[in-house]
Image 1 (tube, helix red, strand yellow):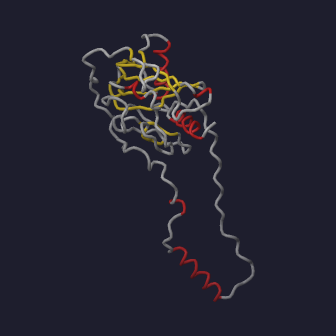
Image 2 (tube, rainbow, N blue to C red):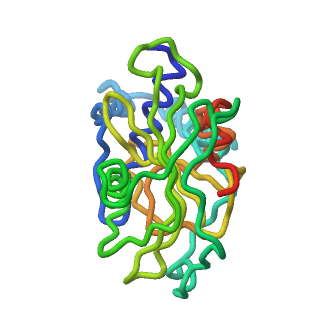
Image 3 (cartoon, rainbow, N blue to C red):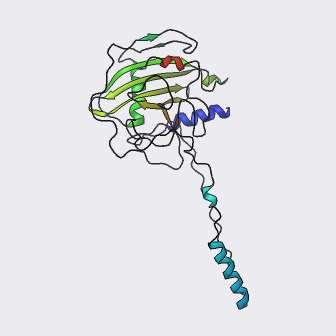
Length: 268
């Protein structure tokens, strides 16, 4: 498997955890135990002269006051490439009814160079319609009725393109919805399905449109087990390292969607 495809798989699994701690469909290997710090060697039992001890104490004092940087603080900051999304202590979006489109959304789109197979809205209640809703429920823990404002289903290649058979075609859903009984939960979601499973790939605030940076946020798996937290404009709580899904980031220098399907989100 190419390194690019592996990175996409890790990100695909990393987002699947939400309000109530849903688990990733793809398990990460157990984090290796960190090496135990090496302590000072025991001092020799033989007696040292007062002068030698004084020299040793002097060197110890110099070491304690050395201004050298902490080796543990020189690594790459995993959030340095993350989009400017800040945590909030308030419940998130104002609990008011979400804005609804003046006209019913379109239910299909034509084939184009940036939407190679076109797109369509699955029939309400059908398997292709309920499948992405189940993924969103498991990922976020949202309960109760979900009101779907818009949904599009489309297919296309992996990002970046791969010659592996199980990555040649990826099913994707764009879903805009809100929870009927919890108006703080409203957003836009991208769900992806590959041979090895389904997952929630990215989320964007409800009042955004199209496929633009930095609206769409993905969450990279974090082996440190970061506690879920709330982000401004996003529904629910999210764990992992946030990154710009449109442009890539958090170690994933690849766009979240390939050029062949970005047009499938036009006019959303």
